[in-house]
Image 1 (cartoon, helix red, strand yellow):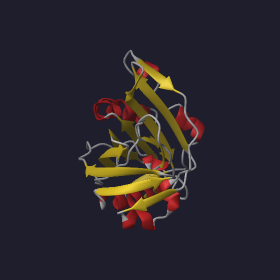
Image 2 (image 1 turned 90 degrees about the horizontal axis):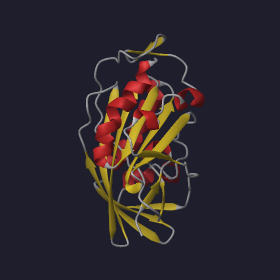
Image 3 (image 1 turned 90 degrees about the vertical axis):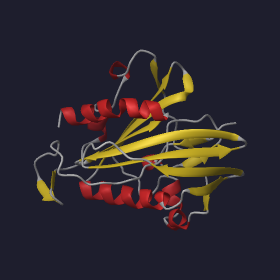
Image 4 (image 1 turned 180 degrees about the vertical axis):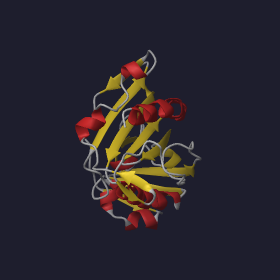
Length: 232
């Protein structure tokens, strides 16, 4: 069996033992100048913002099959699973509590998600998630989670009777948006390994994450961000 990480808030997840999907976590934060995509409103930390977008509005900004090359099929979204998860070897992540591992209190209520496989291969998967909140909340909540993971290059999660070894490698992210994070995670359980990359970009009051096979994440990140910012 292969490790599956059921995607919830920002790629931090409850763990089950299924097929490997597009999910991970992100790190390596930087803050460039104010984004040109920011909308008129009250200035916060040099940025302008208005009320967060609705889930319906975010849905319209997601990638679809027409945005991807031939061979991609959208996969149905599975219900998030919230199994009991114990963190071993990462006190900073454990300190944030079970809500982090199960997508609880640091989750954002306004979200949209789309997942795809390429040529029907579950190992060639990519998913996109969009969240909207104030710029400050997006930055603060994601920063706290990612800082915890970044400080633990190796740790273990226990989900029921399944032990999952995780190694985390901070990656450089392309200089896009107002803030960005990127990380490569290797999951190992029952003698099987899986590698997942996630890159997250915050543009104003929208947070975009693209997760999955590393090459596919790199290939589709620009077009995902372009679709988010085109109408804003």
